[in-house]
Length: 333
Image 1: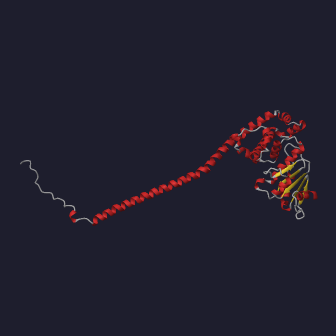
Image 2 (image 1 turned 120 degrees about the vertical axis):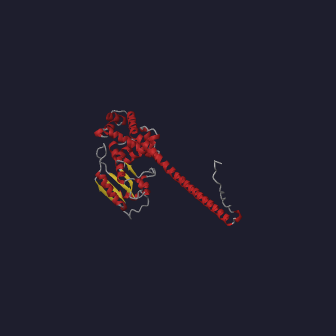
Image 3 (image 1 turned 30 degrees about the vertical axis):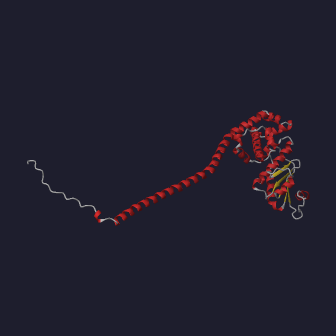
């Protein structure tokens, strides 16, 4: 217990361990260390790790694992070291059989802590069974599949890169993880897809046969041939074609919808503003017409009134003429 708690105290120079000795929880092959403020989280993570301690295609892990919960992001960086990527919320150290992750002070972008722990435990389980054979892309894709990170599938479905980009080879995929930012997120999503496709090809045995052949031959290519009857190049073509069929049309429709939505957000307010201006102009024109008609009527009435008050009696209309009597015309005369 003392050694585990010293990890928390010594990770940051000057930490006052005497004021908060922290907690240590041991159960099965897991040890969780944390500060008192994260005790509830530590117990929940320990229970989740014990409840689900098997991983797709791999034998049940046996190595003991230390899970250290950092109280804040600053402490996390100090424990992990200066080379940790900024977007990381948890880190696995397979050679040390250790996981360092954020505690309850983590932001919303850190993800569900149970899912995050499952992802990191999958890294350790894969390393325990396969050693250093898996490349980075497979390691990350496998951990994502084992953790059930469907969000990576969803990100892949809606990624605009599906419309404009060519899906990479596995070698190109490996290089994408070191570029950071959006490129790394794209690589994580594609790695998830590749491992999902391998798992689906394995039928009822899933990845188990592939792992067995891969480990016995020490070659990813030979493992593919023996487990799936295809070359590495053939598998790359298969997963790219399958991904295009599955997500290409959906991604195109999704992104067209997104583009239309963006245009709607920009254009609809402009249309409404133009319509409001036109309505005001029309109302002003109507008001001007009404005022002009009223002014014309008032002017005509005033002219009549002015004429009636100043008329000359001599200018009165003459009396109607009285018709003269004439006898009927006599045709006999």
